[in-house]
Image (cartoon, rainbow, N blue to C red):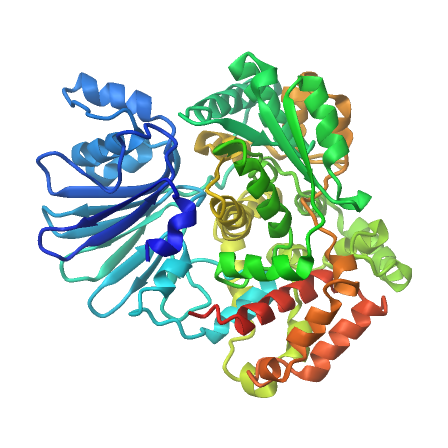
Length: 607
């Protein structure tokens, strides 16, 4: 199992077997802090308590000083021993005192318990499986697939979840016997083996009153502190720079924290297609800040790279930007071991167009909503099929205005509609699915916070599922495949709590989101950074599906072995491909999701 994870920690391997033989832990270490001494798994001196964890505790120095003042002595300079000492002093009550990203396993031989813990936002993944007589856990599913005692048969309902969202949301997985520990949760196993799951952190669901000037000051202060904490390392540190708001702010704060912009390494990736080339924007920011800037032009063989990604991600995963992230991380790792990034800025500060759509729809009068819906029907009839067309986006916004807020937000988030999947499923396979269950789950999640605004409800929903189950898994797998550690200052839990609890007007207006970031950092960066339209970290899959990927698309989805699985109708798959190629519809993301699923099945990624 540990060998399957060697890429995550290529510097050192460690192992532990408890005295009673009941607990074994294998560990692959990426040496970032205290390389010479902080070996893992680590057992407390004189205690039958052993700990292994992936990630970083950013406030370990403050915690170490507090423990030392109480008489605790330390043999290392790293955060592992501090985390172990915190558990010995406070037990699981230590969790509220930790700042960082972490997936932790603690074996407490004093009472025969095993604790598995995941950080508040789910920056670090933790997978586990529970059998009749054992619990098995790992940082990636591929290690569980190597165990031999885990049920890795397909969970059919996961396909319905995947088709709705483009990923399988926690706590379930594509496999019957494998679970994901949700963010902000821990699960404890006693000598009898039964697991007890509990939640130890949740995002805020109410806004608080705050003066505009105070909001700006707090955002500046907390983000500045978050960046400084994430610069602690005994290895080279850089940052990913797209030229967008979030990554540019992180780069600017790194320059300020180090006092030497020329020593800050910034990295950007681009494609030859101008629509997906971020290099000019990143270059402008790097020149403004004076960083040591590095650019990478990638023109990969999409067919070969897709299979490589499928092997790395284990589960079907439809986020096409994983490809760009993967190649960027490979290049960055050649120069640094740790890189800061801007992940989380959109979720925390209301940066997505769909966030503004929810804000606008809540403020809209019934009469205006009716007028916009009528205009949307007209626009839909002659809008270009391209999903990025402003008119197409307007039609989509207008078409959801009469839906309840949770379903309205789902319409902005979903990959396939229920009608589209109904046309794809075979009748026999559909009988095994609860077709509306994924939609109902999403509605419950959206409404569960009982938020006082639709904007906050949308942000909170993203923080609970899209962020950990898509964006952070994408970043973790892509970076750790090359032994690169990514750190996200925007996901400092104090920054998250502040950002979510800001009043709506501090986050969005009719024209754009993340207003507070422009107010707080506008003087530090070129003005065009804040005027630039929101652009995701995209790749040209539309053109690939019409050219270099077309043969593999047809060979994979229309192959008899795939059809014989009984999941999808061949005629429906053929129609989806033909309509996209003919320009009758824009199915780029849906076809990419199906292609990934087909490659996953063909490559035997079910274990």
